[in-house]
Every structure is written in structure tokens, then in C-alpha cells.
Figure 1: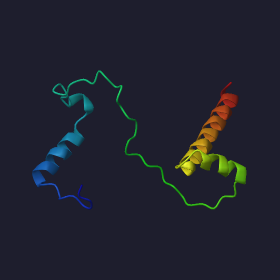
Figure 2: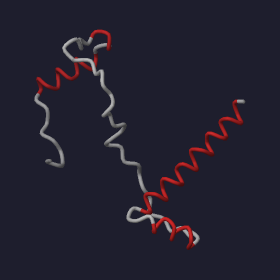
Figure 3: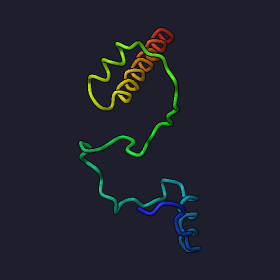
Length: 99
């Protein structure tokens, strides 16, 4: 895959894109697109990569050992565990606020 800046659009293609962008959605003809009936192999956000920040963090040795014993990718699993904690805490805050 070639990286960097793509070739610039021709004036004709740019004019076509500008015209399409100016059209309301209701006027865009999508009848030649087949409907997607099977979403079983769909993947949400395959190109999304969250911004990561390097950080020095003191964690109890037994906690780090436990994650490391699970095998390669222990930092990813630690991040996932922290994310789940944040998600659960946020849900708890919303439940208390809106009940």
C-alpha cells in the first residue's frame, strides 16, 4: 500500500464530489447498491486506533505478575481491565444520576 499524499483529484472528479456533497441525502440515488442482509461478519471500527500515551505507573508486583502469567499482551489486557472499570464506573454514575 502506497503511503503519503495521494495523487490530486482531476478537476472533473473534484467537481463531481463537490456536486454530490451539495446534494441532500434524499436526492442521492442508491438503488444500485444491494442491501446488506447479513451483518454477522461485520466489525465495528476496524481502523479506529485510540491515542496511547506512554506513562510510568506503579502497580503492585502481584497484579503485574498475574497479568504477565497470562502470556504475551499483558499490557493490552491491563488496559482492557482499566477500560472496563471506567465503563462500569461511568454506568454507575449515570444510573445514580438518572434514577
